[in-house]
Length: 251
Image 1 (cartoon, helix red, strand yellow):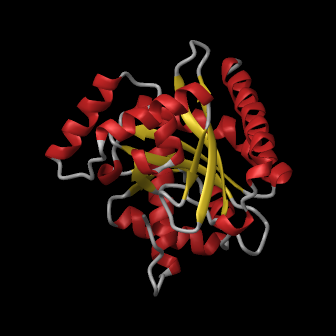
Image 2 (cartoon, one colour):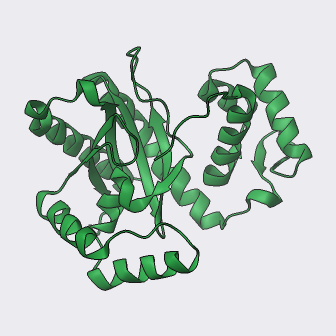
């Protein structure tokens, strides 16, 4: 469970979010950073220059910023994540417009799930952007969806490795039962599991071969969750996931 700090520092949060964008996507312009953070270009420029100074970013001759030595990832991983995010964003925005709640896209790395895209609801009481945040996979909507794609022995191996790194380890027997249910129903409802007072509903996004690439979800304050609307929410999510899959197939 992640609780925002009592005394949040906006500039630090902005810098960390930019660093995450660079790490996941590889490149970023000042205009892109300003738009995605909702800040002035001058503010985005100062943030990026500080990241360059600390080797989190580098700037090329065209004034485009790239992930620096501190954030180095395999180029293939960056390009795949960037493609997935760029393809999904319009569909996340449509989800928010249709359902009125914040929408997210997450991938899994080992025992963790990372949010690679997030679009906030316009409602005053809403779940804020999760982009760049990392949660234990078994506690997050996208993580559960992607774990459900694995065989039991693969799940056991993931958490055996996580235990060696002192990461949180779930009750594997209970987790296997839950993952089997998720596989059977094709969606997951996460009620207060990753964050108290938040409900998320999600479905998988698959590649043309049927392999799950990511978890697509909406998140809402628990007070606004209506179980009577679950089937409608799931149907809308499946429609959005199908649209993302179709768009990916043409890339």
